[in-house]
Image 1 (cartoon, helix red, strand yellow):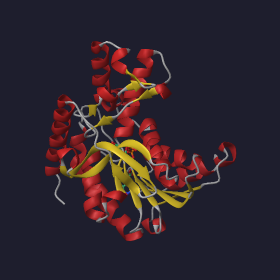
Image 2: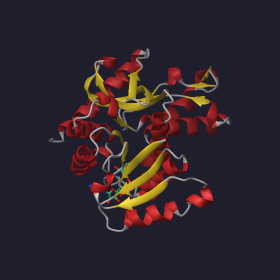
Image 3: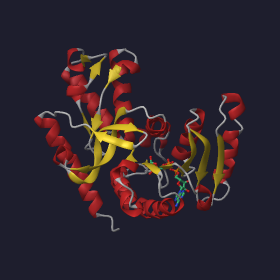
Image 4: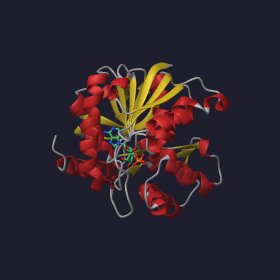
Length: 309
Ligand code: APR
């Protein structure tokens, strides 16, 4: 258990994530910080009041003062504006880059040794902004996208195959956007290659639905984007680090030559433990998957070009 985890942003994703992290008792204290007056305090208190019923002893608190975040062991960054219908994640880039820049400066000052998991979109670019501004090593700045994309893919597959979601193993790599790369060659149902259980046309449809998973939710919600599954995904990454589980999860990592890519964040299989990003696994890809990953990386680079640091 850590001493203090700070969730930055008390909006839909941040508040849901704070509750999940508290329920998992990943830290003695979960602090939610937001610029909106009263919102983090109110939500934090409300969550803490659920503790006697849910049975967790993690103290949830809210604040508008970054000074209170001093000494946090981990930051989960969800600050930013959410995507509206018709908006691509990249449309968000300039606004959210300014927000994440400001947040990163606060983190650097308040807790120079902290671990940071970034959730704000466009994810891969926000990770880069965080890494550049904090100056933290890649082990301590990791992005949440692949776990969410993979969860969507697994949910759709489980439904189509009428099997438990728990028995679907899969990996979605690449940037968190329409160019993401679900790895069909590594998708199995309790070890059985999915291609033995499903025809190509159905699988292709599921891959396409996964790629548009975020937009599908935005289409329903209209005024906001997904938050339950994103919060679950970020909480799973935090848990892997806090409990030193050495889990292999698809996360956005700062690449230094892995997969032939350099100086950008993109989703790859990562090992998460107490050291944060403890390793990147370089798995064999088909020529098609390798090309799709390259294309996805190019899309991330293009979005990076829109941001001035
Ligand atoms: N410090 C702290 N909080 C901030 C800051 C800041 N500098 N700037 C903005 N915020 C807060 C907003 O006040 C708001 O409460 O971030 C919160 C964002 O909440 P929502 O608008 O509800 O957005 P949400 O759905 O939670 O999405 C947040 O996560 O998944 C991504 O694409 C999503 O980038 C978006 C982010």
